[in-house]
Length: 278
Image (cartoon, rainbow, N blue to C red; front, side):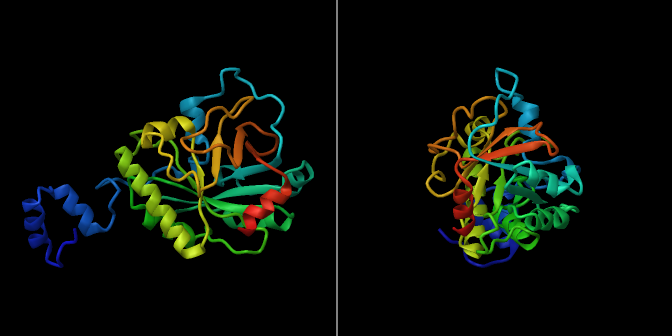
């Protein structure tokens, strides 16, 4: 049902008749449906990177150690936490793709992004950007647009991976950012739709099975379109989130050589290139 255009005071009266309270009115008027009203911008985004909260909340697997690296194509992910990255030694060690943190929420931009993103490209790697989500600070669409404007875009050059959305435990408070399970699903969908409308590509979803079960009820509706990037630090990838039969990328350790987070693409370098080309 749509509402007629009117002043905030009249809108409040209309919503009151419908049984909708003032907090919902605030969301309608602000255009940030899905966010939590009054949520502050992140205060330490330089500490928030893919897996930072996974290790904190889930730790290592029961074995406590990582055995031999899984089969597939080796990759890394970096953020401002690593500063300027020496890409040539990583290339020589066998790393062939990289994901670089570009943004967080609707205000933070990785100050090392240009060096990291262009540096990996110049060594020959296939690279992409990721966004650390804070669903309580603004809508999925707002954060997707911010990501796209600051490094998260895609081009069919054979060297650029589609953007990734990092969904994990809240570094600043409530595990699920104050959203209901349906609210979280709607937020992610909002981000995905906005990104695809601009680029034509489906976003890669980074999330842990445990967090996804807790905050979405193990929703399976994204599994047919969105590639899965799953973190689990141990000898096996373990159970996957609802609907996914396999992971596209496995972040298998947070203590890799040279750069902390190492990943394996579930396939040959040719399959990495296929994902880059769409």
